[in-house]
Amino acid sequence: MKKIYFLLFVFCILSVSAGLTTAEEPAVTVSTVIETSQDGSHDLPEPLMVLPFVALLIAIATGPIFYHHFWEKNYPAIAMALGSVTIIYYLVVLGDTHSLMHTLAEYLSFIALLASLFIASGGILIKIDRKATPMLNAGILLFGAVIANIIGTTGASMLLIRPFMKINKDRIKPYQIVFFIFIVSNIGGALTPIGDPPLFLGFLRGVEFFWFISNIWYIWLPTILVVTAIFYIIDSRNADDEAESNYSGKIEFQGLKNVGYLLIILISVFIDPGIMSWVPSLAPLPIGIREIIMFSVCYLSYKGADDKILRANEFDFEPIKEVAYLFIGIFATMIPALQLIGHEAKALGDQINAGDFYWATGILSGFLDNAPTYLNFLSAELGKFGMDVNSKADVLSFELAHPLYLQAISVAAVFFGAMTYIGNGPNFMVKSISERAGVKMPSFFAYMVKYSIPILIPIFTLVWLIFYYGKG
View 1 (tube, rainbow, N blue to C red):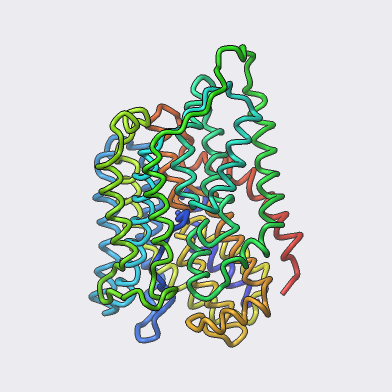
View 2: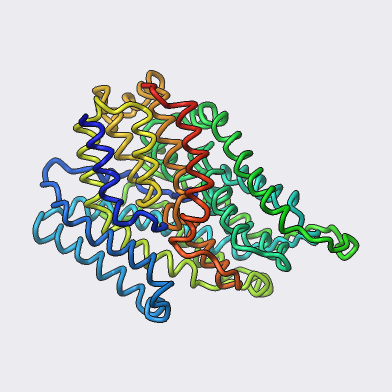
């Protein structure tokens, strides 16, 4: 019964925000190696401290619908004010600076990666002068799913969303952007540690680099194909009979030097003391060499970008600004929820099977940042078998002895990030870019009710039934 209570506890924390939308990757989110689970030297927060997080989710969901102008003007202040409530509680009541510093380090890593990929990709222009057909659109989504494992879901999303919209400029519909978020911004990045931040954190903890592709590809491939097939069927109903002769069929690529900046970002992902012993730690500073490189790329790639390309991409900083403000509030207010859930997961770990871990990790990854969620449940899984998440030897032993458990949380953390707008960083960025281009995106409620719940939940349930039901 205790594991049932645990799952109910997870659902209760999110019950007020059920139907809201939501934030991975990283794509390749390069979060500093941290744990957001409860530090033994401090007391657990009061359950009531989850309320600022719930209030922020409600504001994100209702603001653009019911008080749009007020929200657009004041969302930074709202996010930071609610975040400040949690920060003050941890400082004054708990005296816990440890959790706050770890969260700050994670946020800076998160925003450094997203900002650098966003700005560097903004200086790259892809022109596809072909007729927008369901087959071409499906091909772009499949291509994005593949390259998401090379340049991260954030990199793939920022590189392809603008050409995807331009190809469909005469027939663009919100569902096309939603499926882009499903496939390119989330599910696609499940095969490598570069693809999505939770997997990268697992890699830093000791999971072998190629473990993910060898243990997840046979879940990833049918899931991607099924979601793409559903998109193709829906998109076929939106097809037109415009003559093919209006198009040259050419594909142009401009901004090659910014590809170099993308490579620098990807290389910097591995510049971490946990991977390369010669890399100096900048502790107690909340950033490392990696983040300094990424923030430098932000400046250099923007200053060196071709103005014509930036204008053609309609590039501005509003999407990354919105993500930066909202997620600083999300990262702060979610600390109590993560710690309470992490505590319960460790306490009940011996009674939770792989299927339970799949659903718990997935549900929380849709509403909380999936990187710390993944770490909490990775820690709980190792604790279930008497192992320590801080020991690379233990993580390697766990990977070899209990691959089903590791697979369950890895798949769930990446896949379920598509459930809400804040389930993964690129989701909100794609939404913002699309809205600024004139696409009327569904509200937070509509995104879940019309798209993610009816389309994704049946697919994810099928994954559970085939691979995890009654196992472990």
